[in-house]
Amino acid sequence: MFSYKIVLIGNFGVGKTSLIRRFVENSFSEEYLSTIGVSISKKTIDNATIMIWDIEGHTEFKPIYKQYLLGAKGFIIVADLLREESIEAIQNHIKLSHEVVQDAPICIALNKSDMPHTLDDDKLSSIQNLSESVLKVLKTSAKNGDAVEELFLTLNEAICKQLS
Image (cartoon, rainbow, N blue to C red; front, side, top):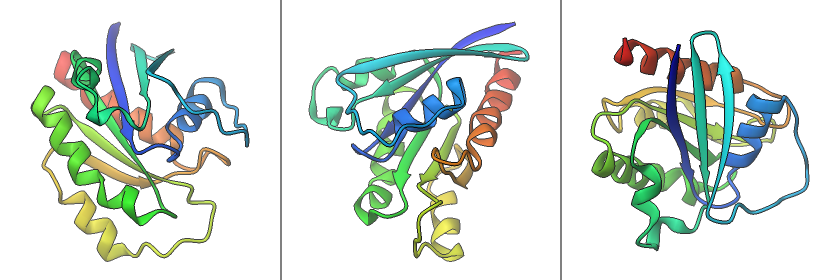
């Protein structure tokens, strides 16, 4: 049995907390509650106990931000399919995660896929190719659960392979 830390990174309001809540508790709330600082959840699956760190979206300019990333074995970078600036920020989030933990596996969640959006397959491919560390780019919905389990399980599988 492995125990490790993953960190969700992304702009404010992209759905990081909602994705975690869907994965850990299989629940969803329409109520928006901004994370302040960091919130830590835990879930045990098959061969691992995952400590899931949810970091507030405005933290990247604070000196303590990189401290939150230390010790992470993997990252989930979350963007909002309805907000282009959050998708454009993915590259910066990848760069930041690499500065703290080189070559950690990354999954990218393009969240709110239950809403009408205009992201095409070419853009999806370009996101996949931003880094060799990116395992998978998934269109997710914390609201209806689309691809949420796959997101976390893909990252878990890659981390467990590295740890064994």
